Length: 286
Image: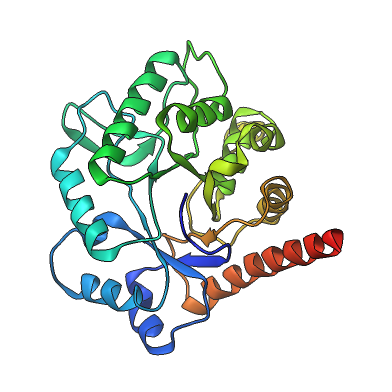
């Protein structure tokens, strides 16, 4: 399990390096994309070295392609392990997806078919990655816009079984659950009910956009990380806290990146909900 505090954090982006180093905002922790720090030197790594002295850090990967039928990229793993050894992060995570085939990489996090074959393959690669890194990692559910023929289980059962078979933890993205539920017509609460809370090491919150289809009833949601967290996602987050208890919670914002104050405001909302949940539990315990 991750050693992140059950507080709110933000994703650290280059646009905010100077301000974070100057002001050291009151945050529980910070998360960075692992691949941005694979080079052995430079400004980004200098910033990360400074930041990790002040905050717990989570390394969040986007390129390991654990769901691909390709062999794991050993060069990528060596770079990740070197970064892990240097940073000593509180958590390391990747996505339950594939992004490469035949050695060619795509700039997207593509969903898996929820089949026994895909389950066996991704669990094998997660175990290999954990053995190589010498630590348990978290796996994040992705948003999706297509379904595959021949699926034998819903996504939430697939994710729970991945965690069980590979002995990994779960990074639960609440916005991704909301987006996929809207796109595919399932109940987001059914998803939450199926996830083993003891496996959750981190929660993600982000903004999405509506892609207007023709006809209008074919609109779908896109996980853009370019907007504030939607009200309905905040509601689902409260449902997640009720089901799982306090969990480290991250605000993600990767496109149309706003001023740092906007991210801190979103993190403040998450922290208020976390604090409110703790207070309600204290009242019940008394």
